[in-house]
Amino acid sequence: VFTALFLTACGTRTENQSWPGLSTDGEKLYLANGNTVSAYFVDTQDLAWSYPAEPNATLLFYAAPSVEGDQIIFGDYGAAGGFFSPTVTVSIYAVEDTDSGGSPPEIWTNGEKANDKIVAPPLQVGDDLYIGTADNFVVAFDANSGKSRWNFEAEHSIWGQPAYKDGVLFVASMDRTVYALDTELGPEGEDENNDDERLLWQTPFVGAIASGPVLNDELVYVSDFNSQIHALDIHTGEERWSAPAENWVWGSPAYADDAVYYVDIDGNVFAVDALSGEAIWQQKTEGSAQTRPVVAGDIVYVASEGASSEVPIGALRAFAVEDGTVLWTVPTPAPLFTTPVIVDDAIIVALVSEEAILMAFDRQTGSRLWSIAPPAES
Image (cartoon, rainbow, N blue to C red; front, side, top):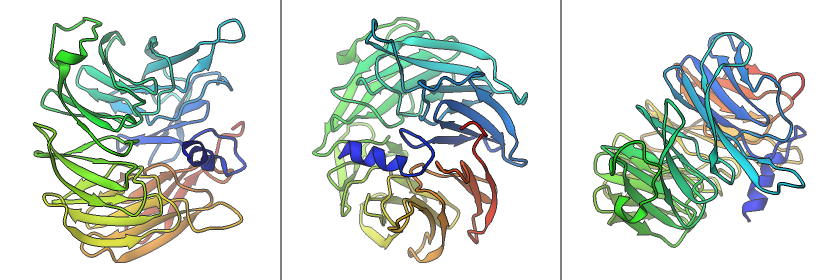
């Protein structure tokens, strides 16, 4: 089933092995897609930079880049060592954000701490960097040097971005468990693996968890493949409530203004009370959805695969926060597997299509504002 879901991202004519990763700092868009990571200016849609300078067709990037000041950090899907070296080398890169239009300067790279693809977006917290890997680890690094500090081993892959609050790192794993880890344990600079001491609590579930946790001051929200979302006490991991979906919930829930929003892979969209899990409203988007809802102002946006068609398309739909009323729906030329980002009055989606790799729509009306075509050699 996992393979089938990933292969649906290859439905367009442009070759791809997964869906793109997208992030923003409000001025630029950072897109990990295929064999490059690129930055584009939001106001002009011009290319700010692209990495690496000479793309390697066998080296792929899909995890959304992490942006902190002038430092951009991302991981790759791994490069095979060749016939005489069957291992896979997975690297993490820190580059300097520039406006040159060329390739950005490397700050550091680390190819020693992961042996399977980076799916989870990195998380930068001050001078600390946390990355989940597909070979079951979450690794803490010095964000300035790339030197690893400590690691924690789960029992399966970590595909979702960890979350951080007050010295505690919250990690969700495909092993069906959420972990709370003490990030301040032990002296800095040690490359240590003291899992038993670092673990503050863990909470198991029935379904695997493919996305990252979402926090407020009291609760940790997670979604799972048992067709539910869960709210856990942030201090103890005790489950406060759970709320149902009609099928797997792939993407993270979204928290805003005392409500939690989530969407299942059948395209059912739910809003529940953040403290009790009591249902507020339920709606439907077009096609299957693996993304996280995006809440901005009084609107909830959901990106999805779009209605069934001989030609794969996607859809972006806007719902009223208050009651779930559908405000507008726009089609896209390829399915949307990536959570959109908000910049000012625009909502921006990433897609894999010969027509565009990025599209921006007016948040209030859904009218298309602009699009960026794939590079000539994509």
